Image (cartoon, rainbow, N blue to C red):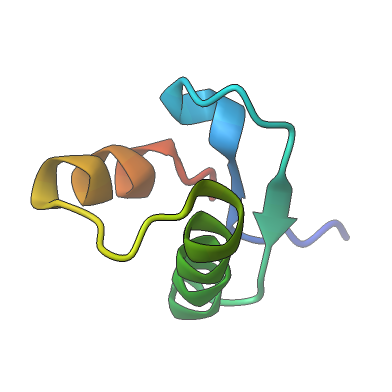
Amino acid sequence: MVIKLPSFACKDIGMDCTWKANDKSQEGLMKKIADHAKKAHNMTSIDPALLEKVKGAIKK
């Protein structure tokens, strides 16, 4: 049996970035995404429109 983990790739929201991540929970994945956005893209905050775009790009 294959268990699908929630996953995200920066390129799926139009970023020129090859970073990908997955986690056992969407909450854990969102933390990884936020940490990556801060470190790799110098984002100190994510506006609501981008947050919805990110959530919509998460594959379950």
